[in-house]
Amino acid sequence: MHRLFTESNLFHLYIIIAIISLLGCAKNEPLAPTEQEDDSLVFESFVFEQKNNPNLKTDVAFEISNNIINGPLKHYYFNATPTFTTNAQSVEINEVQQVSGSSAVDFRNGVSYTLKSATGTTKNYTVSIAWDNKLPQVNITTDGRVAINSKTNFSPTNITIEGQSKYLDYTGRAQIRGRGNSTWTFPKKSYKFKLDEDAEILGLKAEKDWVLLANYLDATHLLNAVGMKIGQLLKMPYTNTIIPVELTLNGEFLGTYMLTEQIEVKKNRVDVGKDGLLLSLDTNFDEPYQFQSASYRLPVTIKYPKEIDASKKNEIKQEFEALEALIADANFPNNDYLDYFDKTAFVQYLIVYMLTGNEEINHPKSTYIHKTNGGKYTMGPIWDFDWAFAYEGSLEHFSSVDRPLFWTPPAKGTKFFSKLLADPAIKALLKTEWATFQANQLPELLTYIDEYAFIIRGARTRDFGKWARGKNSYDVEVSNLKNWLSNRGRWMNGVIGEL
Image 1 (cartoon, rainbow, N blue to C red):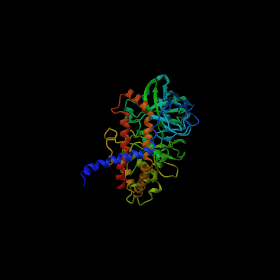
Image 2: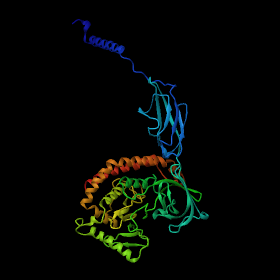
Image 3: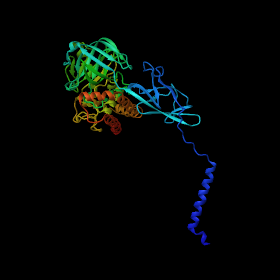
């Protein structure tokens, strides 16, 4: 071969030919157009219309200047549907088409709109929200500004509630006292108030009796709300609704509270009828109508009927102990105990308490059971998640994810409720119900946490400023809660799978 065509020269020749070929192809292919900023594209108006955002009392109009859309918005309305006018051919957020008066947008994080012309030019607008993070304001002034220092004696008071445009305002007379057991010893107190007349409060159905939970132990200000949300997602009857509020008592700001219903037999509460029954299992044995059960020595308080004589008390005791005897019987579960006990409600109750790590049923404390006249004993309503989420025993929320629900050695409640879980029918139903909840409702629960946390963020800061508590940022606390629930769910897979 001629020395002109050495291997090295051939290689370079191939490179030259390839470059020429590419240049030839490039001549025939048009270059992709680059987006250009087009100042002729404009948002002419940007409004949250009340007709498309029914929670708003009035339209909220935004100002538009220098590619910035400025406007006020309350934290409650972070998910809103804007109405806009523009000369652009299309409007997008992250390449998703937006329709005026129709496309809902989550405004919690930064939002940027892109206007596009028919020729492909664009212009970007950034939304800037002046957030109002106030919660409904509950203002209570006792007559003579008397301090509330009793859990038994009520003090007359005036009460006003500013609903922050999300809820109706309220003004009225009431009686107020302290509430709680161990929580009453904390600097930040919980309260119960009784209105002089039935009234709807913050969208909740009209009754007289209401509770303000302090959540002093809870750095997230979420835990009781999360527990109740799980019950609601499971469609457990008579599960309380939690409304975050800020409380001022006798002119002193006391921080963030949860307003919720009092657990009681009423048409708009635990509606078991006037001949129904509401029992509480609680070692705080300090109410008039109580007994210790025969088989498991459970501390049973008769919450309803409210006024009973010795004969009625004995009738209720005997009826409850008849069920208890069936559960304690050597033939359990091969007897007819499920004719008197609602297994679905018990399984749902177990899911709530296992997922939240609420060990109160071991004592037992704050454990309710209800029934209609002639109906089955039914677990619930659920209540009190202050000591849940691994707090029991460790005095630190989220300290461990694999702490069992039931205690060793067993307490009175442990013996009773773990015996129920020994029934194969209960085990099978628990597996099915948990699998459904984990797949379908657990993601919704985590979304609820993000939304609730956003709503109370400013109020939580003000609360911790008042009580000088907390070692982590709020983002860390919320992340810890969500991670703990996700990991707890995985732990439950193993525990329930082995039943």
